[in-house]
Each structure stands twice: as C-alpha cells, then as structure tokens.
Image (cartoon, rainbow, N blue to C red):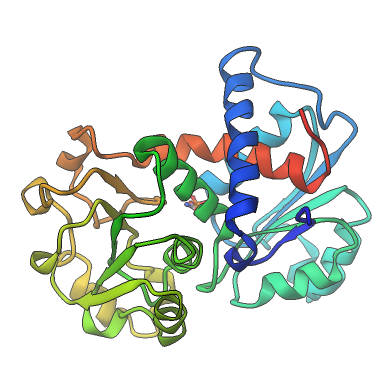
Length: 305
Ligand code: CP
C-alpha cells in the first residue's frame, strides 16, 4: 500500500524504506547530472514551519524545486494569522486548498496527527515537538545504508538526550525492525530514553542497554548523537548542568566505530576535531536530506521516474 501521509516512523516498514531508497538513488543521480526534473511541474507544495528549522526546511524547498514544483510557505507564526488566534486545524484546512501536499513542522507532540486530519491533501510530519521526526529517520537510515551497506547486524549508540530527541525516537522505531541490532542509550540520568521506546525496542528483540557516561560506551558500529534539546527543558538549570559534560571527542571514540551521525544542528555534543575523521558522516547525512525528500515527495504524490 503506497504511503499518502507520513505522521510516524512506525509507518516506515522495510518495504517502504526499500522503495524510498531506490527513488533517492535516482534523485541523487538527477541532482548530480541535470540538477532538476519536471516530475512535479504541475504540483504545489505547502511548507508550514512553525518551529525553527534550517535543514528540513531548506532540503524540502530544494527537493520541491528540483522536482519542478512550486512552493507556498509559512515560516514562523509572527507574520501569520496564528498571531490572531487561528487554530492549527483551520489553518491547515485553508492551506490544503492552496497546494497538493503539505509539509509541516509543529511545536507540540501530537500536532502532526491533528494537522494531518485537517488536511485534504497528502501530509508529511517534519517534526512535531519532542515526539517524532520521521523524515529525519529516512535520511539517517539511507545514510547508514549507503555508507555501511546494511541496517541489520549493527550495534548503535544513541546520545545524549534520548528522552526529548524526536530524531532518536523515530530512528529507533525504524531500526528496531531489523535483525540482530543493539541500542545503547547514553544520557544523564534525567534524560534517559522514554519507557514506551524501550518497551517497543525490547518487544522487537533489540538488545537494549543504558548508561550515564560516555566512558561506558560499548563497541558501537554507529554513534548517533543529537544535542541536548535546550528548548524542551522544563528546568533550564538541568540543561546548563549537562551541556558541556556530554561531548564526543576523538579520544572517546571506540575503535569499533564505523560511522558517526548527528541530525544537526550541532551545538556542544561533538567536538569540532571529530569533523576531520572519515567516519564523521553528519554533513554527508545532511546532504542526503535533499535526495530523500525528493523521493518522499514523488512517492506521496504518486509519481515515478
Ligand atoms: N535535522 C533537523 O531537523 O534540522 P533542522 O532543525 O535545522 O531542520
């Protein structure tokens, strides 16, 4: 069954991943050769971004334009009728009359479900509060597949805010489908992975461990880091307490490590000196965002190259 809406990484079955990866490879070839195609020349994409974004917003814009589509957008609430008290549902109903697909980044967990229900056109969750970021997990898994050739039979370490990182939540949901994977969550004690995520992973036979110190890193194949989610801390002193304590340096990287990823933006979680290592894949990962989002737009709009 082809996807029409993407709300959660739970929808990203192995079959869907396979389809999107195949499309993304074709999109990469287009970007590297002619640079664009007219596959979606008759389509209009609506971008509704009510939380800050650089990568997700720009890569969707780039993807839409490389596919020949037009764009209408809302960026931030300041210049829109949200300022006058318009509801999310009403706004999305209106925007869906202006375009053929909506991509939305929304501030609260669960907002994506509400917005999708209000939309009369295909809908993509580009991050809803501290809940999920399913298009990021497509970017992440595509990058791992292209760099390591497999998503199975790998040990993954996740840090440093698995409680509040929507990127970690969605990536774990996708990776937990694969055979023989282990997840080691590294975080301060107050920011451990949520119970629902641990239970989901264990129910799928993932080897799960948790630790509070970088020095306790096991032997990961992939280290996936995300900044402490400053904007989601109810108590700012907790953020200040840990922001410099959890930082990966070259000396702390176990020799087993084959790839280091970060959805970015990087703040304090990775020392700049790590960038020099060939296994530092986070800028290649960000670039893959364009190919993956071209693939996703084409899939949800029912077009094939
Ligand atoms: N990875 C990611 O979602 O980055 P932005 O917040 O800049 O979109």
